[in-house]
Image 1 (spheres, rainbow, N blue to C red):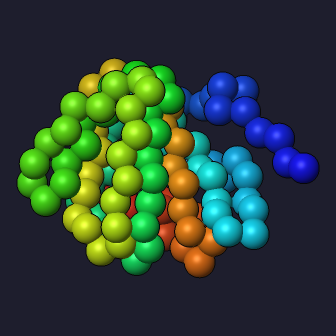
Image 2: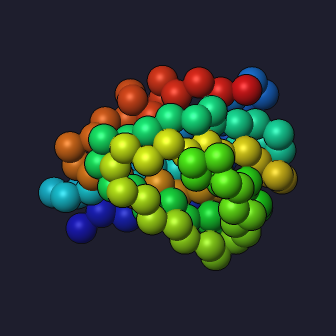
Amino acid sequence: MKIASLTEDIVYNEKKPSINILIETETSKEIRIVFKKGQQMKEHKTPFPIVVEIFKGAIGFGVNGEKQHLVAGSLIALDGNIPHDLTALEDSIVRLSLSKKDNLERVKSIKTA
């Protein structure tokens, strides 16, 4: 059994989103991304399908140039190789579910603004 919290030990970085792995299982990695209002993850792709949950706040989520306004409680699922970007419309906590085959360093290397 593994236990983690989306709300404990929150760190809002000044320059870029804070990215931490919460739990790793045999099939997935659960990642927490903490955004300050205005921070971005520029357009990128993942090689595997993902699920993104907005736990707190609001995110502008771009998919192929079309923006979705996602608020706390929203989920979005994407297949691999789909261009997408995230912009924090307010201070936000995002949960990202990655394939076990994907890696945290790839997520941390995404360009930010």
